Image (cartoon, rainbow, N blue to C red; front, side, top):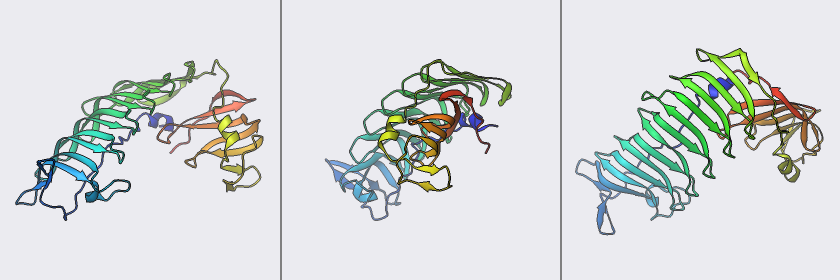
Length: 300
């Protein structure tokens, strides 16, 4: 199975975390007239709890700041638990059963926008799932069966709102994948047989609009990690000249572009593109400054 095929299955929720409380906690605390953080005679946490900065000693949290709060029953999380950023803004809202995420959940960016939302059961997503860009635009929209398999239409979006990938999946196996450029024009149509790419019936298209190198202005302003054409050595001290043969890397030290440049524009070579999780999703080929198709993704 190609790396592109596998990307459609790769999904790692960002919300799962465990919270433990040190043994030095008092049996209970009185806050605003309410009894909280109660530990019974069997040393089990009961009722409503607030986990304060002084209990976890996490960076950036003040001693009296709330890190998270919710209810315990016999030292196990039950019902809705809310977690907070050091700024005090809500970080996540997760339903628990016996200390395991089970039910609806939401995670948030610190600016208040929803980061992702869905339903979690038996250590996997079920029903509908959405992930968002920080600007509020939908990034991913998936549907899962009750057993956690992708099923139906699965959509990835560009940050401008245009569809990036539309995958039709039947009980966890791809049947058809359609890809689009940021301008909405068709990029590729991929057919699958029993979940495996049918190369003979895969079509790749050239963008109707000239491909704009969105990195050009950034490359002109800032130093870029490059590999010299003559030596296999990485340097983050050189300023990219915008001309000649170069290999460029992104901030995650992943290869970004490899080829011949003219006035900061990739003329001949490969442009590696990644999703927001740093996973390689496509390798675009350029000739005479224009997109001419895709190179195969490397095998695992």
